[in-house]
Every structure is written in structure tokens, then in C-alpha cells.
Image (cartoon, rainbow, N blue to C red; front, side):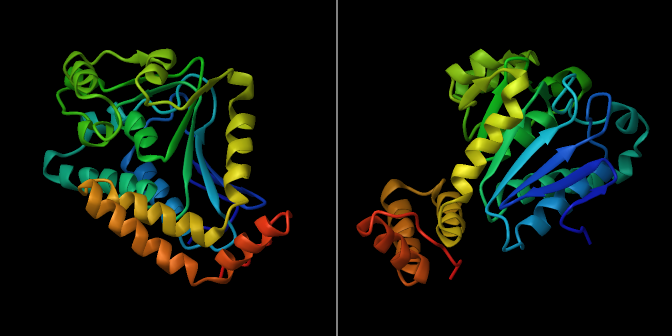
Length: 261
């Protein structure tokens, strides 16, 4: 079991106020082994059960890479009959991030390739440094990429271009197509992500959790069904003390004091 601030293998969990950071610390390029997949999954699964944090950051140490994807040294010697274990670990990790009960911001400090690109895609918001790039190079190493995850965000033609060529796009192109929400300098990346996380973390804890669940569940529904689902979550939120406090704070022109109930 992870403690609230700990290092588990090459995955570091750090808490500052109501914001928690998950940092991949596996030099030189933060590639993902099966063990690191599992550590990431466990970190986000536990974060999702915490009541003291309201927004999460996913980032990495260094500037050589945010995450270079699958660790090819492990992959080269991994027994084919056990590939289902690696695949299951990857699915668990991506689901743990995407379904984490609080918003997750990716602070992408360098190349995010293959599984690293998918990690960013599974986050709710992506902020990139000017040194970041994004790619699906799996076709070059005999695998298929994470098109299902990127396809939620990236236009179809661009997705297929990235998938079939294996060529990455830079941060500016990723911003142009809407994959990245903001580009900042490398020196300001973490500070910019933390500033945004702090703004989000000030909102109603229940509103954030119910809102994220509603957005995730409505994503693939027809518009009318999706909106009806959102309304059902809004009805749940309206029954809470936090919702009444939010309304009172607007009327009284003061900052709300949320209690998470």
C-alpha cells in the first residue's frame, strides 16, 4: 500500500495541499516496464480513494523524455506466452488514470512516445513544454499503437498519419490540433501545471468527482442521452451541502467553504 508521500520503485507520489503529483522517475527516458505500469496503476487507484486531494498531476523527471513508451530492453526478452500480462498491466494503468475520481493534468516535459503518448491522452488536460513531442512509433518496432485512446482527442486523419508513419508531432502541432491545451517554457512547466491544479482543487470536491464521472460516462453517448446523464449527476450534486454552500457564497460575494458532503 502506498503512503501519501512515497517513492514506489521509480514512481514518486508527492502531496502539496489538495494537489497530488505522480512523477515518473526512471532515467534516462522514463520508459515503462511491467513493474512501472503496475506502480503507476496502484498510485492512481489509491489517489482515487483519497478524500484529501482534489486534483492530480502526472509528470516526469528530467527533460530527455516525458515517457519514451514501452521499455524495449524488457520487451526484447519478454516471453511471448506472457505478453497478456504486459498488455493487462498497460490497460490497468491507462484505465486508472482516465477513471481516477479527480481531474488529472499531464505536465509533459519532453517526448511522449507510444505508451507515453497514451499516458498523456488518458489525462483530462495536457500542458506541454516547448520541448515536448507526441508520437506513436509502435509500427517501427512491430506493434500497434494506442490509437483508441488518442482517437478520443486527435482528428482521425492526424491519428492515422501518426499511426502509419510512426513520426511524432511537436508541441505546437499538438496544440494546433487540440491535443494540448497549453504550451509553456520548460522552466515554467511544473509551476504552470500546479497553478492550474490549484484553481481546480479549490472547486467543490463532490462537484469535481461527480462531474468527471459524468463526463467519462457521457463521452460516447448520443448528445441527448449524454446530457440526460449529466442532468442526473447534477441532481445528485444539488442534494449536497457543498451545492448549497456554493450558491450562498455567490449571493454573499465570498469564497466558498466546501466540506465534501
